[in-house]
Length: 416
Image 1 (cartoon, rainbow, N blue to C red):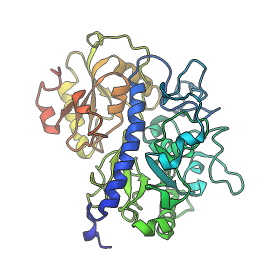
Image 2 (cartoon, rainbow, N blue to C red):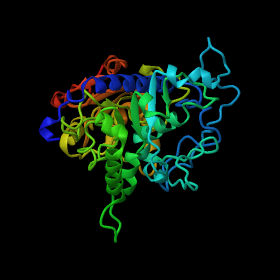
Image 3 (tube, rainbow, N blue to C red):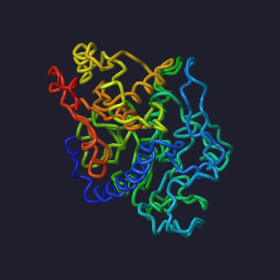
Image 4 (cartoon, rainbow, N blue to C red):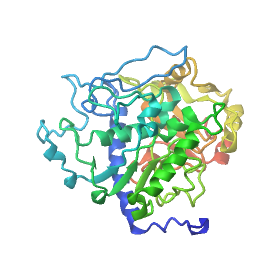
């Protein structure tokens, strides 16, 4: 099909129907997570701890100067209520409570070889084994900044556990074995890990592993009955890192992409008509036991990170020179290496407003770092797409500023 024919309307009602279903399901999962992020007491509750017994939820940064990894057991303690517990329903669940026929969204997931998913995390499968035994241990996702694009990992785990007998959760997205019964087809390729870890060519190889995997994925999908049946319009592919799927995206464009933003996509490949903008996983520490009042926070406005960036990120250096000497404003260079994440956590936890400035791309995980810090986000970006804007009324709790409007002296230093 010629590029000129690529129209957001070409997928027809199938895409719109599928988009509605996947949008609804993912929205539910992340809204629930946000409620727990915003709680100021207790342990992390990002997912139901009953889903994955005997494992560690989060891998921490592997840098030498980082603090020792803090282990969060996924097994629920007796004192903790399940994340999705229905107080009006039975506490003991059986599989009939999550009959795929009654699910909000029925999902067919390809059994891709492990090299496309958990094999990228260092997991070694047994003979003829496709998926890890998550009842024993869940392979860890890479730590540090890798975590911000980990939605591919969480969605795959959610589907793998969707029919567990002991799963204490609502019957929303459930994996089905017959693709003819499915509303959407999920492609479990960890594209962000593939880019972050395997995009460099290692001599004597001529091609990176990341590109080889994309080529294999395209060939696999084009050969599948499911793809041929719909032209790919009911397929869901996660490409959350802005540089992931660089080679395959031009061939797999009819599918629904789950993205961080549209910054590096032409509109005939990705657009708001067919694709889903999903939140980043926040990197800084969630602020538990927060007893501070808004006026008690000593820092008015906070930013720490890379200041000299290309594309829309030029605004960072403009704002740096404008704000660096302002009273009660912290605007400085910083990185995630060393003790950078801990310092940023302390700074954002002490701030009234937190800057989320366009960098190489229109969005960043700082918006979600701010939410986890109970700090009012101030977004400086022209092209940002906020996740789930028809459900999460983010504009009611954040400040949004156009690039050139924010350069006007005094606009940010007088935030109120």
